[in-house]
Image (cartoon, rainbow, N blue to C red; front, top):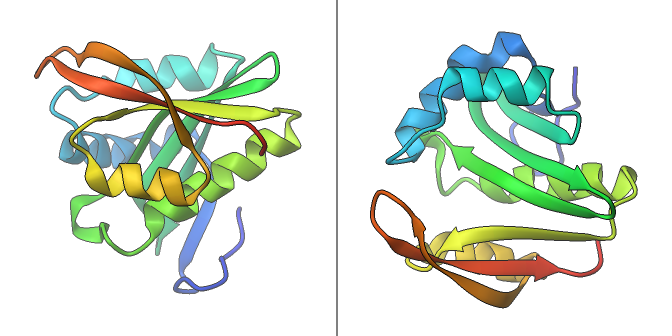
Length: 157
């Protein structure tokens, strides 16, 4: 089990995601994305993708957020970050990203990259505060809306 974190309610714990978390993860997933990942996609990430690492934020036994990354050579590629709609604006996205960055650094990664919707101002502001900088644009990256994605990098973890 993970440990409670400074500055957050003592009941919030961030730890590695397990198969037992997937019911809660799926609730957060469908609450967060227009085109949610399937349960089988998460199952495959946890059981078959040796590059994947996923964390969950849990409050009193309920999954309230999660984040994932792939560890490739010396860089971490963030696959997804999501927080339950009713728990947004509490700093949980920052908490998950900080823990994902710690995990990546502890795993020998030097840098981290991710894509974010151009329109997602809140996420863009968070990533900027965490030291990420714009490195490019992926046109029409999000298939459901044809929205562009900014490519962000953080060179030093």
